[in-house]
Image 1 (tube, one colour):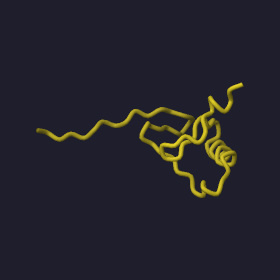
Image 2 (tube, rainbow, N blue to C red; image 1 turned 90 degrees about the horizontal axis):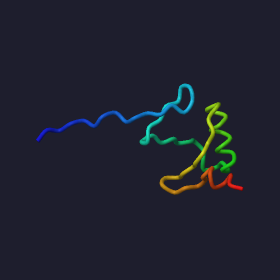
Image 3 (cartoon, helix red, strand yellow; image 1 turned 135 degrees about the horizontal axis):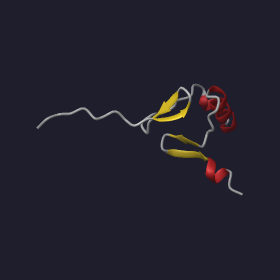
Length: 71
């Protein structure tokens, strides 16, 4: 039996200079004191050109862009 290291996770380019994989997790300092609106604004300002689509806390969905923007 041989042990092997797993291959590198596939990365997707979100915007110039920001690449992520399915295993990445973003943690925002002081997020617990922000409103959802302020959190989204903070991320979109910090990563200019990024549009926040979904927000989860752990595995719990907080915001889904597709549902919140439905007519």
